[in-house]
Length: 298
Image (tube, rainbow, N blue to C red):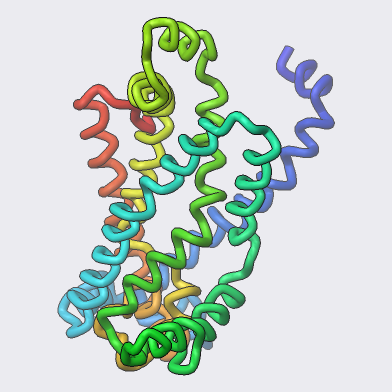
């Protein structure tokens, strides 16, 4: 019976085989390399002949002078993203959903989606040009009698620049899933609420938000799982020596020590440390959501 069903759906299985093979080779197969986190890895000896040293790299990272700085910066930047970015796609989706002119709605959606398709390198280049000493922002400041600001030389500006650029680049694309959830809400609920005298704000508060609450809950849990990870490419392209104090995060630290410093075992150990903590965060947040009666991942 099973083989008969497989034969009938063989073309679907063939289509499924390619992405499955990708994940098996590049995602699960690559996990074999985590062994070097517990070794004094030597590229000439290979994984099987490198000396096993247990948790030595993990102890070295925890006692490293950079440990608290990179962990603090990673968490602070992600908390800023959670506080300022996470609500923005929800708000944008609710606003777009309230627009009744189809043409205008499509124009707004297209404009908000476009930044997502720009590469990180292009976005960073735009930021550097806009915020440089002779850039447009500083020219506007000078035109109003202000003093020009060296944005990329002042640590206190880095997180603000990063979060604002992330909102601009990702808010439109992030709203898609909420718009899809909003489209699944029964229109009769809105009609019934209008008959009861509910205005637009009350419809949003009592119908739209509860209707997408399960989606918000799931995405919030997934976001908590990324609390110890942050956009590596953008930070690497934007940070400078003077901004290390607030810009250096775990991923850039791994890049410097693991790749630039060719300390592959240590870099792998730090990456594994980061992933394990993220797993515990997701598990804890999921248990909390279940106890509160909210939608959970499992």
